[in-house]
Image 1 (spheres, chains in turn brown, orange, blue, cyan):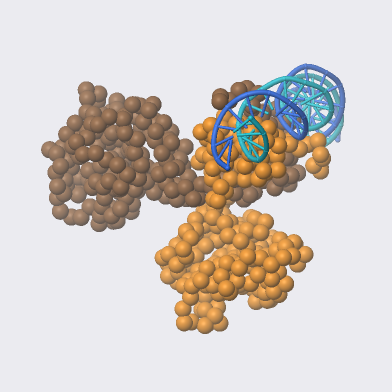
Image 2: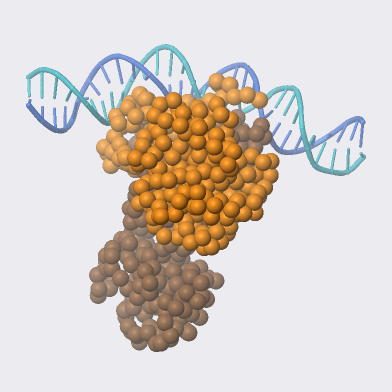
Amino acid sequence: MTITERDIMGGLAKGLAVIETFGADRPRQSISEVALASGLDRATARRCLLTLVHQGFAEWDGKFFTLTPRVLRLGTACLASMPMPAIVQPALDALSDRIGESSSVSILDGGEIVYVARAAQRKVMSISLMPGSRLPAYCTSMGRVMLAALPEAEARARLGTRALPARTPLTLTEPGTILAELARIRTDGFALIDQEVELGLRSVAVPLVNARGQVVAALNLGLAAGPESLAAMAARLVPELRAVAAGLRGLLR
Amino acid sequence: MTITERDIMGGLAKGLAVIETFGADRPRQSISEVALASGLDRATARRCLLTLVHQGFAEWDGKFFTLTPRVLRLGTACLASMPMPAIVQPALDALSDRIGESSSVSILDGGEIVYVARAAQRKVMSISLMPGSRLPAYCTSMGRVMLAALPEAEARARLGTRALPARTPLTLTEPGTILAELARIRTDGFALIDQEVELGLRSVAVPLVNARGQVVAALNLGLAAGPESLAAMAARLVPELRAVAAGLRGLLR
DNA sequence: ATGTGTTTGTTGATATATCGCACAGGCCCG
DNA sequence: CGGGCCTGTGCGATATATCAACAAACACAT
């Protein structure tokens, strides 16, 4: 069965769009502001807002509308029971399909990353990764993104003081060098790895943040090393990763 | 201006009701189940659901519907837009560190409390709480503090007239008993709960007031039940809570 | 103050979309 | 086969969207 034009309720779609116009940057809006932000007619926006007030999803002081905590209840009960893998998997699959490369989400556990979800395209790595797999944080893009989000002292502690194993000739092994790279990652907002885990493998990662803005996981794309420059690779893939990360913003705990 | 009958959009109200039928206990529903749970006609429920799918708020495998994480964003923006979390978090962290126990701030929504911010120390509860989590007001310390701040009739209305579920053998279930406890809370200025929400868990809460003196939230400390008497616990923790509440006085809206 | 131009909230009229009902077809199971 | 349960779909009555018009509030220069 496919969804036809007549199966769509305009009123509901418009109302949801109205709710979505409320954001951190615009918690209080007048009718006209909502109409402008949603593209609806003022009269329609007004009816949507008054309906939300009547149903207890919004409040109105006669001029400005504010969402109530009741909006939070929409769907939260259902999704609270859903673990992180279930939440990120759809986005991961879509990203992986669009780019045609493998994509993963992992969390940091001590000095290691733990794969939480993965959408694999083709095998470029000799080792097979799956949820639960672990890799060292210091030489992976996701690991570095999450280390960069820690306080400097904490990152230093997790890296240790001595040289780390060189998994390939390109692996950064000196804690000092890696800390410098973490500083770059903090300002750029992404990590890029060139064949440090395994020869022939590159990867790019960005952080995933929860509702409080804390980095709780990382999202990456892994690809075979090719003729493309690292800068071009970053320019091509980082926006894609950021778009997915923005869509997941606040959805993880 | 008052809201008249013609200002209400039935379609939007019905669609929101459809979303609310999805809960932790029923994350996957068919058209008929939703129709039954919402009281809507099957054809209407179907149109609502297909609209939600079309807008990306739900998924459909041809038989069952599931909400997508996008629904969470509806409320997340609202939560983020509330300055309250950002304002209380530092104080919460400091308090939690000093006492060595978990501390939270919540607001009242109907008969439930909604966690707005939380500083967790160690896990003493079986359920994990995070911003957006909900618990019933009648059996929680923060809930009772906020119920006590309401006019008597309003509190009575939110409690209902029948016995409430006993989450543990210690839970107060009779509305009359709880109303008496609310009276005590009004005179004492704090609420104390002994294993009413979960065995082994105690908590103390005080109200947080805005610049106009209205109670807008509650602050609590939760700890594992130990040999310490309830009175000693109150004497030790209530001054700490009051100090934090005084520091936040008038900062919330 | 006064006037002017702009923006905002509100209200009607009418074309359009949606609701709720009834019915048809599919699926499962005894 | 027949009964129960489900989903999908026309159809008339009803509700809603859209657009325009209007009054009130506002900004601001006169």
